[in-house]
Image (cartoon, rainbow, N blue to C red; front, side, top):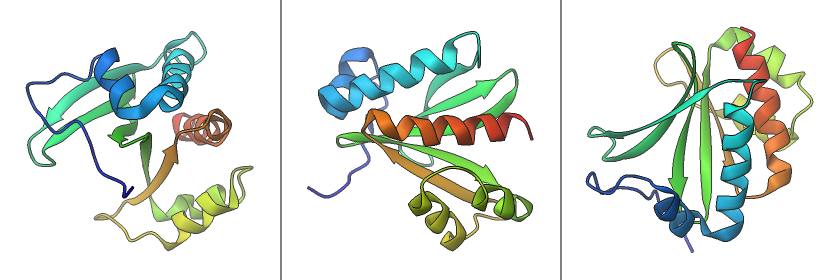
Length: 141
């Protein structure tokens, strides 16, 4: 099955049931674990779902205080986390203890304006380690 961005209907809020249906049991379980870690005392992030007309879909903005740390989009069976960095962060990310595949994709990504997107597709629990390492790096910038 080809990857397809879901949650396109403005009137259907991404509730627990909607997310579980879109992500499947395993994907939703991973999302729940991520949500629990992000909203706990260590990070104390807020997750804010909004419908964006320009992209014609629901996105979750993950914030710490007023700073947007990353965005979550929902696809069929997985979710994507999208971070945005500047070129000066390339070396730091290349030196991180994360998947070589993530580093390779990030180095080859095309800029969006002056920002370089780092996107991670997640549907397994073990992928959260890399996601949380990048999150920690981002909040300490």
